Length: 88
Image 1 (cartoon, helix red, strand yellow):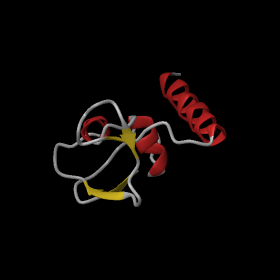
Image 2 (cartoon, rainbow, N blue to C red; image 1 turned 180 degrees about the vertical axis):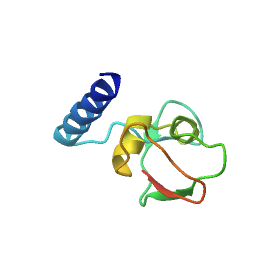
Image 3 (cartoon, rainbow, N blue to C red; image 1 turned 90 degrees about the vertical axis):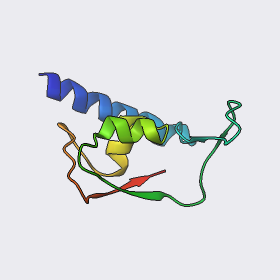
């Protein structure tokens, strides 16, 4: 039941973002003044031992559900060392 609820939340958030026209998540500016910019090209992150999807998302200031969606990951969001993830 919990996995189904998380998957439903992922689907709904993905649909909402695709209908919104503008991506919600982006990188904060180097000045940290609350301004947001989006990189011209996605970044490829190579998973290291001990990484979780949540800590990678926090590192790049993105929602972990969006990170999962960009990389076609589904619950339980398993990642492996040396796996490449796209981060927008």
